[in-house]
Amino acid sequence: MVKALYEGRLAVDIAGLKMQTPVTTGSGTFGFGLEFTDFLDLEKVGAVTVKGTSLLPAAGNKGQRAVETPSGMLNCIGLENPGSEYFLEKTLPELRKYDVPVIVNIYGHSPEEYGEVAKKLDVDGVDAVEINISCPNVKEGGIVFGTCPEAAAEVVRAVKANTSKMVITKLSPNVTDIVSIAKACEEAGADGICLINTLLGMRIDTMRRRPVIANKMGGFSGPAVFPVAVRMVYQVANACSVPVMGCGGVESASDVIEMMMAGATAVQVGAANLKDPYACKNIIEQLPVEMERLGIERLRDIIGIVK
Image (spheres, rainbow, N blue to C red):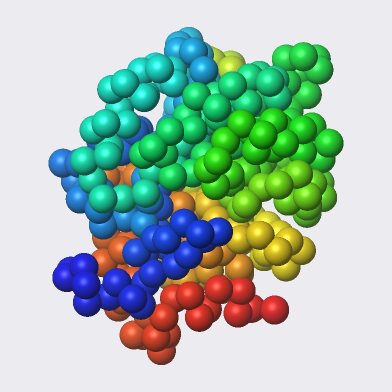
């Protein structure tokens, strides 16, 4: 596919972050991007969203951490990563060899810690930060930030106060009212909203009479969650004025277009990368074909077209 041929037709702008295609990578499913260079030219994606990065290195969970399920997978990786210092010294210089925006997914265990990570990553070469608010709030007795509007807003404010970068807040779908969480984040200063993160799921090995993964419950992702993701993208896009990045079960160019019609400006490909390392490449190459089939001239014209 000749890059210049479809550049204008696929290009989107999400809160000032210009992307030559709406397709980016889902955090936690694409490593730091460098692991996929044998399968994909990183300059072909709209942005590289790296795996969750914390202030200090994190070892993650022990035991069985991922398992396939029908139409998806369960994981309890535990946000294993080498820490912000390693990312800045080793990973970022390698990523900057590619002409592609870099979005760093960050997490912490208190608003103050989120702010510290954001401040450390407020450097040249990082184009945006994506806040993972699906982590336990240690200071508040285990409450997950993403399930409480006030807690979510507190994290967003802490990050915004410590960075000059675009701030995207990634929301948990494990709530009864996704719109109230999204609005709280918008009012706290989020420049964009990403949804959805994984659903909470569980499977049991009936032969061994125990859960299949070490944490008993884990994040459920894959094509089975796509209808839930589309619904939540639609709800938030129609309730908030900041742009939305869709994520959850995307496996095809048709899925990308459906997400955009629901209101997403950009779309992350997540679990599909683990099944097929060529997933992003194939989706991007098929987008112009699907656009021709549907009579779409420019992707940005269909954002939120379904009312």
